[in-house]
Image (cartoon, rainbow, N blue to C red; front, side):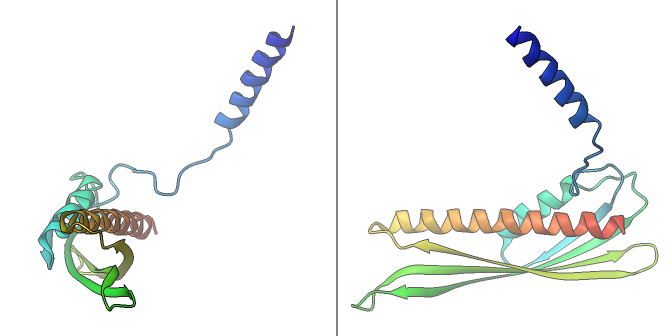
Length: 157
């Protein structure tokens, strides 16, 4: 009898949830934008990752045809020093300026994104480089997600 009640509860709950009409805001919908060309200025490794992520939402069958220009700036600054003056933590800041130009009517959409990330200085230099690369990768992914969300939302309006 208990199993029967559980099955009925699960079926009822699944019917209610599937018919609620919930739709993700950043859902990858087809034909939202086509980016013909992306020009990048700045750090090539970060630009390559961002460019590939943006091309993933691009669809050639879209009505919205744009060209993009991405300008990157990466700054590494000292964040924390110990008593002897040795640096123990760095702050990595990446700033990306996105400029979308509509191919048909030359309308321009611009936005600047910035993310900061910290990383520790390890006792072995190769570990410090590994920490820096991880911070760059995480920061790039966050920037890429923000840019994709901005593009998706601005094309829907």
